[in-house]
Image (cartoon, rainbow, N blue to C red):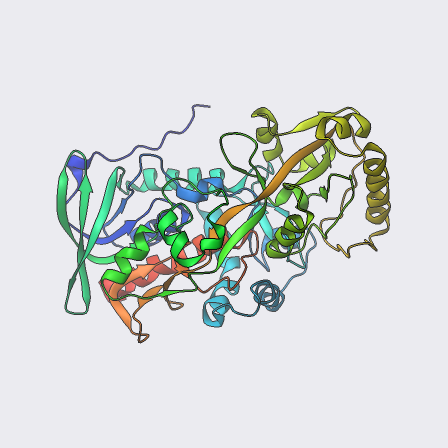
Length: 464
């Protein structure tokens, strides 16, 4: 089968006016564009980079959702109330409760919407901080991000929704209290102002913006990041220039498991632990409940003062989370025919590692982790050779803060009033996740609030 290559639109085809312009080509922006076009709007997407998809491309574990046909097919009886409580607890109780309520009550329909657009997340795994398996992923157990981005791009191509790359938005146009268009900059076209009846900011977070990190979280400046180069907070600046406000900007998530021993930082997806991997210190011993929330796992790794920690897994776990094949192919994974051989390669205490794995296998078999209280992601032990190790340490992963919105995705002013015609969705927004984002909630957020933005833009423009 021929590889799908998304057809970008020639900038010469850019029109002077659109009903709805989306800034950003990640999952939130594409979802919104598709939903809005299906409701009758003339839509265009603008992306400042040549590489499309944003951070959505890098998502690996899954998309959290509850009460879905996928959960029921896996005999998982879940509830929106449980999802709400787990997410609120994970966020330290500081989540925007109105956004959270809308979020948890619309994930099932988001899975169905994707399914109806030939994006089939029919397998399921676990992420830290969730009391049930909720992370929906492709049936072949591959990384969710690339699959979702490609699926949405196919929809854009089928529906002939234009996407202009290399096109930066430098300014939003406003007349009175209403957004009327935007000014763009393109290498071929130069600067140009186009009219828009509604605009969506879906341009991602700011983990790659050193000045913003210095302003909001200077203590993190020494850390590397898993983010793509375009995550520079541009959308937040656009919003504040027209009277929008920001929230939770100092709340920045550190992902506990990033491989940083090469020139690049690679996120090691939470699904590795979700399928059964354990974390050990240099002595070859466990030190944390691997399925706790990311902030607690990060703190436990940092408290070792050992330049990170090591994930231990086996062939069975590799088969259950096929993103490991990619990690292995690019040289991030150590392999041993035996645990002793693996310990030597990973510079771990071999005797302790063997004892740790044996004890973990006992916990797994009995379903009771009496050492650290892990209660999820215990379906398989570490029993099937070969065995694998991945050295990890924490890295900046996600900016929980951003543009303040309401559940309609309308951008709000400092006084809480909606800016007419301006919407925001995805990581560029703040409030949903509180102090700590649960793994699997970001992809869910892009689809849930991307759809909402598309619907509300159509309602606004067409008077539906």
